[in-house]
Amino acid sequence: MATMTDTEEFVTFHAGGKPGMRRILRGAEAKPTFSAIPVIDFTNIDSPSLELRQALAKELYDACSQVGFFYAKGHGISEELFGETFQCLRRFFLELDEEVKMTAHLHKNPAIRGYEPMGETKLDPKSRGDVKEAFCMGDDALEPEQHYPSDLPLPAGIKPQNIWPENVPWFRQSLYEYYSAVMPFSMKLVRLFALALHQESEAAFDGIFKFPITGMRALHYPPQGKVDDDGYIGLGAHSDFSWLTLVLQDDVPALEVLNANGLWISAPPIPGAFVCNVGQYLERHSNRLFPATVHRVRNMTGERRYSLPFFLTPDSDATIEPLASCVGDEGKKFEAINVGELYVRRVLPARHKHPTAIKYKDTPEEELVYSIMFQ
Image (cartoon, rainbow, N blue to C red; front, side, top):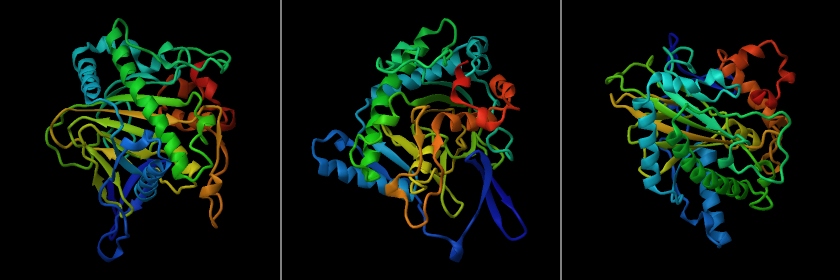
């Protein structure tokens, strides 16, 4: 959302657990920055040729260092599956009674997963609130569809982290069909990032992605009529709290990405492609070489919109810090952090009305650990 002083305009957003703002620069003041989102064809991601994979990693490096966003084509996931997934979302959000959806209300789940009714969140404090409803699921070692590695011990005291609506088996089945396709592709991207960041091998990050934190958030933005109002926001301006995000969009344009001049750049849907972006963990891992770019959703078309972001973050017990290959003369811009601890310390304030957030609101930050999300 834009604010204005007597002589200057600013864009406000939420990133890194706190509000921020960026001055809008035009004319002679404008900086060199992006005006479009690059498109990468990943057809060669499984090529036996290291040279071809390195060329692809160079495209990934350029996109993430210059923009923090890219479109992903050639991923090998069928458009038929995409269509079936959107059909499932439409059926869930439009055809199910509210009382059925509320059987999986996220307040019933300590991990803050499940159904999120309209108006539950307000990422941009200057907006009227986020105009959307959602359903979130993610990593859960107890769900057989996720194939928890047999050589990893189950965390002590673990309980189910996902919650599903009662008597709606087709919804869980459909979301897991999609999850089972996007998860392997996201792990291929992790290996390509290892090449892009000049690691000793493509397997360099395997040790922190044994059973990663994941999130999949089905989103429904209802039609609002054609509006042109900065106060109307489907999802407020923010940067993602993930390592990497892959978003499946339907054919309704609404996603906008903030460039260095404080201008919003449209990221319209490309049929059959994901739009992907760097999250705050990868920003830390790369020593801010890859920025977690601010973005928002404004559905100004008057049409109903659906999207399905998939969030990938390293294992909850992993420690990450800036990679040596990314640390230049300026030194490390971030300290080493435990992934799960930082996750909890960011997620709870963002969902301050949730019972888990209320329960731990007075707990010192250093005592907030990932295991409280499933206890």
